[in-house]
View 1: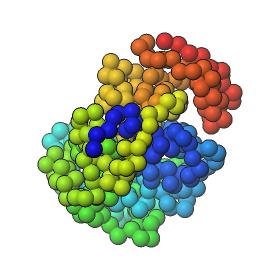
View 2 (view 1 turned 30 degrees about the vertical axis):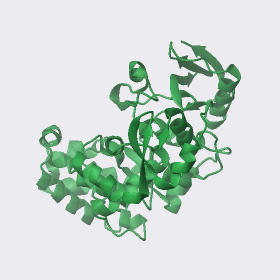
View 3 (view 1 turned 45 degrees about the vertical axis):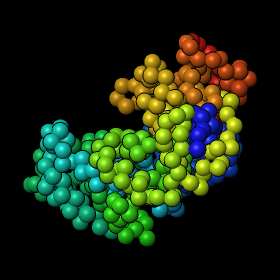
Amino acid sequence: MRITWDQVLAWRLRRQFVAPRGDAGASEIIARLAGVQAQVAAAAESAVGNRQNHPRPGQIDAALDERSVIKTWSMRGTLHLIDSGDAAAYLSLLASGRTWEKPSWQKAFGASPQEIEDLAEAVSDILRDRVLTRARMVSHLVEDPRFAGMEEHLRSGWGTLLKPLAWKGVLCHGPKQEGATTFTSPVNLLPDWSGLPGPDEAAPVAISAYLGAHGPATPEGFDAWLSRNSLRTTVVRRWFQEMGGALKQVEVDGEPAFILTEHADELAAMEPDSSVRLLGAFDQYVLGAGTRETRILPARHRAKVSRTAGWISPVVLVGGRIVGVWDSSDGVATVRLFEDAPTPATDALEAEVDRVSRLGSEGDLTLRVER
């Protein structure tokens, strides 16, 4: 089956509730997107609210409280909100990469594989039936001489030594206590939690979730999104092959990729999209494809979107392609279009700025367009 990138982008916009927006709740959106990055809480709120006709304040906290969603370090080692039912599958695949055993990781963070195993066992015991702030959890840990030298890394907000524990299903974020981050075990939050499935069992769940929002894609594209290509290529390709008839190979402007078979007819029938959208920082539409996907973001403009320290800028979309970036301050929403990009209709940009005004806390914003 042959399709075009214009069809792919239109299909992704629809599947991800970007264009048109819909009436899905936070939990459904987070599940459909295969997670929402939550390093910056406001960005997660924007990612969900920007996909709804009628955004509701506090809906992410409500989803966490009802435990349809959990917050934990997952894809690419970043903090995400992920669907509770799919969480174990994502974590299983991440754990299978055993990143913490790589010499470069050990050199950077000073912990051996055995020390990570010991740390996981200790944290599992500490969090049994408990929710603890980071400070209290670390205080318990460093009482053990084995972990005293890890205190700085354990207290770091980057959570580097804790990420392998999250992937192993030992800990996740718990309810905040007076604004402080807490940790608990997934088994404490989720009554149906039964540990991590094996990678071969987990793979179809994670691949299906990813392709359901970000397809068509290659095995390498899936792994780039999941683990920054830290898994073995032969293994990831085998997972795709073993899904058999559940996947269909298509040609996107002559390049092979996979889609869920159940979505193939819908994709083939798509017409190109011309919508204008302002998406917030760290939006999953960008992260799912990756900023190296030149059919969405021209390589010459990548540095404007993927910035230092891992920051992903808010973007301007026209027809699913990134044509600029934007930000807001002092009552002004400044849209900075790429010099070689088409100029979106002013009324469409103004409608998006009005929506941003209602979503955010800055009040009414005035549009300014620059190149």
